[in-house]
Image (cartoon, rainbow over all chains, first blue to last red; front, side):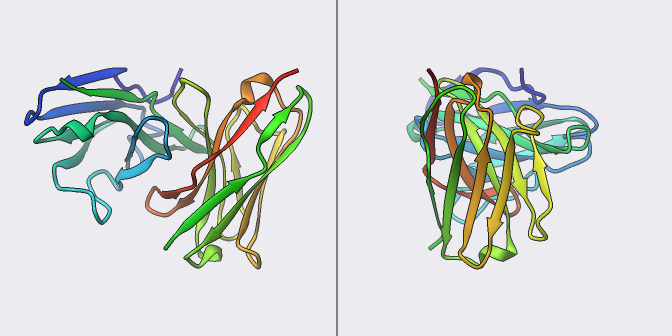
Length: 110
Length: 115
């Protein structure tokens, strides 16, 4: 059971906007910035969003992040077939003195 | 080009030991925190351990006291010494560079703990 709670699955049709939530606590999301990762078919994960809403070079602006209190969200607009992947949130947790990942959300493009 | 290449995985019996290595290139290794993250088959990502530029170390509760992270800046290597291995440690182990998140990852090395 993860310290960060994500829905196990999400889905959308091409062109739609989908959001994936990540719920934490005051010692994790409430105190630190959240990062998001995309993983295709159990290959190495890729950093998608850092510092809540910043995109590394090469990540399209269809991907955006936000945070409110002890929860964060990843939004994907203009859904494409190659967005189908597993998505993970991650944050530093003061009470654990370590990084924690959400359980992951499998995104299906219908 | 940033590259991280893990090695040292394999099959080990419960209670055994293994040392993973991560060869880094394409960046100033000594200037970055480094981490190990693992993923069991069919499961999510789990942060295992991290080491700062000053050599400060951090561990997940599940491995504390059994695993030791270290780095050799002169050779651009990251290590993970794993002792008293359990079946639950079976996973692909990734090394990752820590900068504004884990921004670069290796391809992983598989550790299987089984008798």
